[in-house]
Image (cartoon, rainbow, N blue to C red; front, top):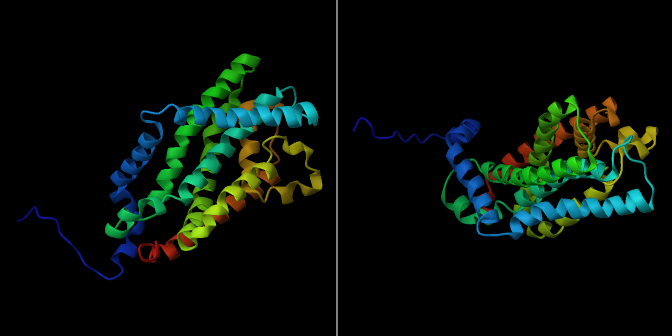
Length: 276
């Protein structure tokens, strides 16, 4: 019949049309994202509470330890709690995205071994799902601002730009770790430690200003430094500044991990169905 679909079998076709297939399989992307959201939040209270309590409790601990006990400076006249929470938002989004993405392929074994589609859809859908936690946590930031009577200025308009950078950070590093987790199953025990370690070496509980000037560029090899400083600049406004050289260094490292993560994932993708 004239309306029958045309099946084309051609060597290398899937490879050449890989990124076009991302658009063709966009409905699968939506389905996977909404499935993960439904599993996390449907008929549950702890899912929503955990998205609120985790950054909130961490903010309280960091405020007490770094702000009250260690007497570390805040950004200008900004309340220490708001300064910490403004950094906790992108970090929590990044950490949750990497953790969820790292196990996403293993959690979809039946789908991977039976159906063709660009495998990169699965870890990226996990990153999108983590964005819901970010939105829930952002409401707490608004309440904190109301409580401390702290109003942002026009810088807040640039917040989506830094959120996009955080997203690309999570995608690049998440794809690389996901590929490693499929090939080396015991790597899943290392990932939570690396994420927790990253929290303490990132300027979440403290401001980047305490880092000596001569080490700022080296410190910015951590790609989340630029994202966190950017979030603080967008949310706190004139109370903080962005060090351009450090920010550009973080952007460069982010682009490196994004390209490297995609290349590594694509290289190992062909063997996923065999080793998973």
